[in-house]
Length: 134
Image (cartoon, rainbow, N blue to C red; front, side):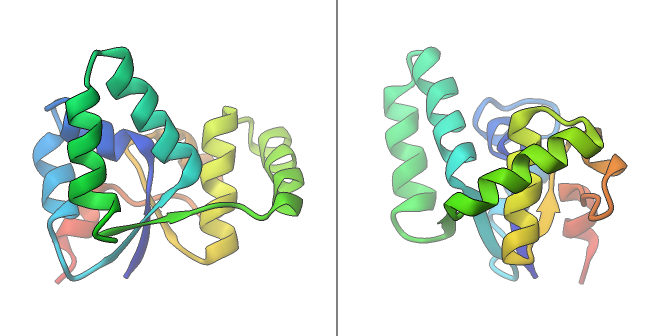
């Protein structure tokens, strides 16, 4: 399955938050093809460096991004207009609208802990739900 992982999936694992086990299980499961938006990649970097996590940022890049375990996806410029449409229609924050449009554009299943995606036609899957698929 081709999965676009929301920022919160990565942050959950990196900061050992309550759902870290499910996030790590998903990240380490070779059965799925994993993707991150360029926006989420930068958001993870902001959060890590804000918490003086330069070494964690380097480890994140070396473990997931450089070896292409997680592929970075960027929206084409014209799809940025679609972000505004999604934000207006479903009322998510900019970052969630960006994620939604990225998943839509590349036909990826959106994986997130964020309930805001439940208001959209594409919805979202949780890491737990993906981990249960055999």
